[in-house]
Amino acid sequence: MAMIERVHEHIIGELNANTRTDTIFVLSSILLNLIALAVNSAVAGGNDNVGTTTIVMFTFVALVLVISFVAEVGLIRGRLMRKKLLDGLLKMYKDQGVEGYYDSSLLGDYRTRYNLFMLVVLFTGVVAIIIPFIIR
Image 1 (cartoon, helix red, strand yellow):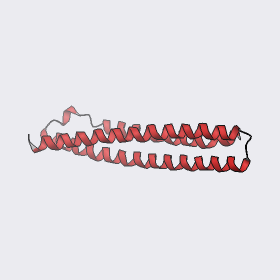
Image 2 (tube, one colour):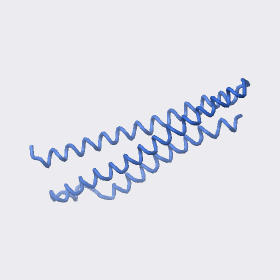
Image 3 (cartoon, one colour):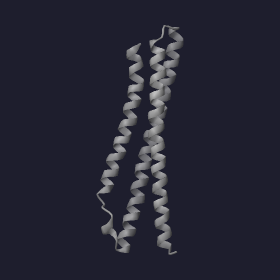
Image 4 (cartoon, helix red, strand yellow):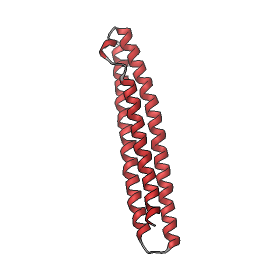
């Protein structure tokens, strides 16, 4: 197997790992934000001790903030890594004379997709924070 084929396989493997990691960040943050929304909404709607309720709510707000921050940073780093890997792949394709088989406009589509993922994470986090306080 030629070295160029090994490099190609390595880049493709890294792109696959990058996709799995991004999927985990998005799904985990959305799921945890929705759980925090449910718990905080239930706590806010209850008639329990106001001091305890406030502590629980702010603890979940902190959790949502941390989860959303980590997911956003992870997605930003994933987007940068994907761009570097795809740039390397495009250069390799150009050097091998097969660049016509990969549409470089896909790079812009990937950026849009990452921005949409980040918007979903941010929006579910904001909803998970605001709604329980409205209920209260």
